[in-house]
Length: 132
Image (cartoon, rainbow, N blue to C red; front, side):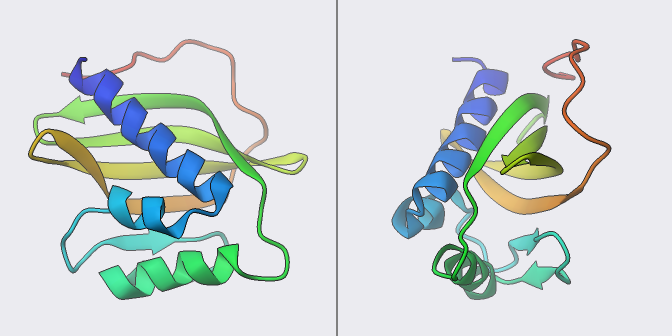
């Protein structure tokens, strides 16, 4: 599996865990470093391993946990760092997301997730999968 494919796979693992409301799987996809971070739509940045995981727990255990899926994922790999640009489908709308990964042994682990409003559904134009 190429690095690009591995990063896209890690991104898919993240969204499957999110959609399944699986906190154990979400915990495992994040890098095991103290300074991971996340910016949920309308939130201030959340920094720190415990705070990020608690933010996801509060969303998933809240009164209206989102039904989420990822579409149009494009991976950009540079050595031991990578990021994925994608759209999150929530109900009838879309958010734009950036997920930053780091290589940890033979796995890609999430360092930062940021989602926010975008200009609409993903464009259909092809974007290169990686910039090696």
